[in-house]
Length: 220
Image (tube, rainbow, N blue to C red; front, side, top):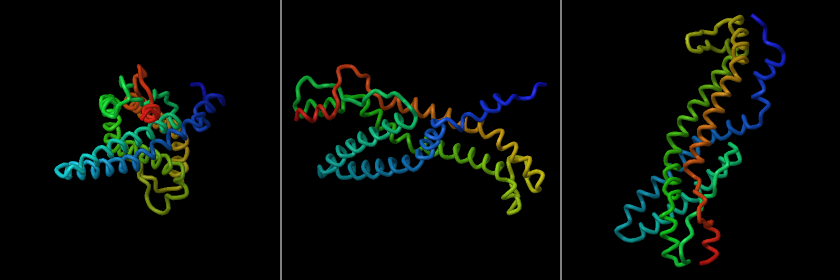
């Protein structure tokens, strides 16, 4: 059996030299706190708005919530573009036939992205939890193996069925950790790629006969 060459080892660890790897990691770690924030904003806004609909102010709260959702979705779109490298079409509302307030209102709520972006923000909570759990599990497992010689004496380290409780086991664990680290980060890159594709699908307009919200507001 041929031993791996120096170039093969270099390729194995090349993932750590790729800036995109660290951008992906940042996106995955941010998904959890952002998901919580979106969930809280959505629940408070919807419950308050629906509860006060009977006195009309609830309608304004719900309208404001849709505005907040649109702004947060636009922020998520920018994150996916700059951190994940996704090419996402603008979230434009279809251009109305005239510039009346009612037409702009109907155009916004008739835009599929308005509803997909709201759904995306609500789904960000469970997806953020999943991303966080997977990311932390992989990082903690790799970290526990790599730094085993420094921490095994503070308490037994259990990685699956492997109980690391001796210096020899700890040195062996470091080697195993260094070897599997690129594999773990490839899994995280794949998870980030999936997240980016989902964001692209949920937050992009079709680009047909559309104008931006800024252009619409300029005509008000």
